[in-house]
Image 1 (cartoon, rainbow, N blue to C red):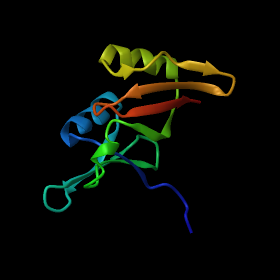
Image 2: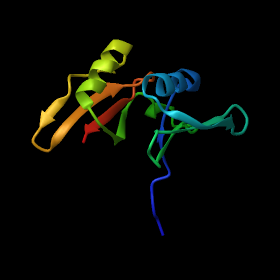
Image 3: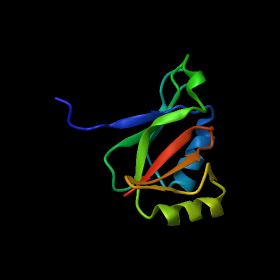
Amino acid sequence: MIRSLKFINIPVADQARALTFYTEKLGFKVLTDQPMGPGLRWIELRIPGAETGVALFTPPGQEDRVGTFLGASFACDHLDETYERFLREGVECLAPPDKQPWGTSLKIKDSEGNVLHLAGR
């Protein structure tokens, strides 16, 4: 039966630009980067300390998904410090961390215009 989430897919228009963003700005590590058929490339990343991967790939015919809201939330320690680092590094933050009774969250945009949600612990 199902035991975990292997990866989430993030639709991207430019895989090279997205790879740079996710590795250099967010600190993800490359698990695999290889051709996947004619004109296609499979890039799968790992978040240090996590089991779930992130794939930077847009299936043919799904290009309209690039630049939308990603239906996932990344857990993040020290969200206020992360927000300050993102500002220094030029990561587009939609607003400062939002502190609510149920927790703190932050929305950012990746290099492709996708809105990512980060949730503080």
